[in-house]
Length: 162
Ligand code: MG
Image 1 (tube, rainbow, N blue to C red):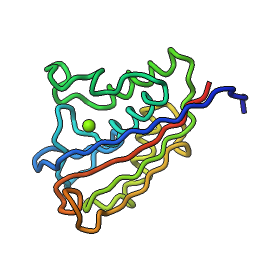
Image 2 (image 1 turned 180 degrees about the horizontal axis):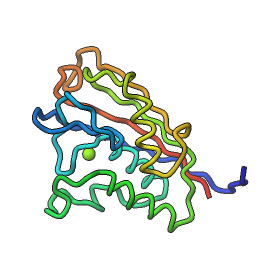
Image 3 (image 1 turned 135 degrees about the vertical axis):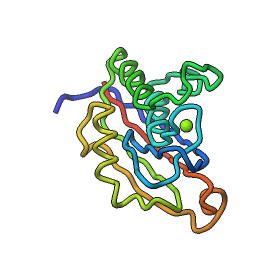
């Protein structure tokens, strides 16, 4: 493997409220039969957290600044498009995305049955191998908005090298 003189780590987090009647997207993958996430975009909290982790590592503005929710152009936006913009920013600055890791907290759906699909979907969006994307599902033990089943929270890290 190529030697990289410079490494940067970044963190991202996101919290979205569940909204019945919207489709649920995680890592660009639609999870059928589950309430979706409210948001100006399609609400894909996992891609949002990964994008912010990448942008943080690269020392760039976060997606809230790049894609303001006051801009109607981004209404119901497919979050894979946000990720493609982030990927282009990394490429322009000469960064290689080494890996992504995330903790996804929600009461439902259970993440395990979907984990491989979500890893593959995320890997495809960011142009890396699925082995470089990891995902852990947790519940919030009934505590707070996540524990009450009102919301889904993601905490993510990204490592960049160049
Ligand atoms: Mg978001």
